[in-house]
Length: 270
Image (cartoon, rainbow, N blue to C red; front, side):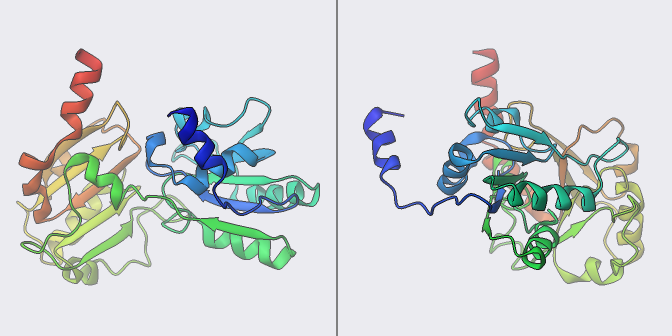
């Protein structure tokens, strides 16, 4: 980025990050180039960053060295902070007069519990701002050559979480309705329970040889994509996480649209 470009950004009419406020910011799927300009602005103005495990080190590196960093990541099967404790911490930090950046992977309102945190801040009288981010289940999949909609295959898509707050398959999800809702299903946080989910979808009418693509470490140099089917997904082992799962006919476009793998080869292998 040139000095002129930086100077232009510095003059942009960004909103003030006021002391005593909390910004809930989506950091996108991983690559720092997928940050919004408003997220970039927040990183440079925050006093403290409370960040999820899914926020990439490359994104965190954009924050000034003096900024306090607090890890608040929740990963399945590992000791993690309780959501209530994270929310209380945000309120406490704001009441200390600090500019609090709550940094989340993807988008705060796409299975990111941003709505819960924002509601708690509102109840506590804490000023807050929501800064949307690129979700791995939307723009992030473009890095694997997977358009979530295409007029030749689907005019609808459904987004579903693969586990509930207890870590189990969501009991509140009507899987037969999901199976019928759209040709393309995008699953978040579903790797652990994917064989069970696949069986429920097949039982509800999806065909066993339907394409399934699992994209791990989306938009990062370690990105990989695994291709399988609903009927054989249970044979996969040691699938890297975080990962996003796409079920449906858009998998066919990877043959011609998988551009990022070539870029990774150029950077890694020269």
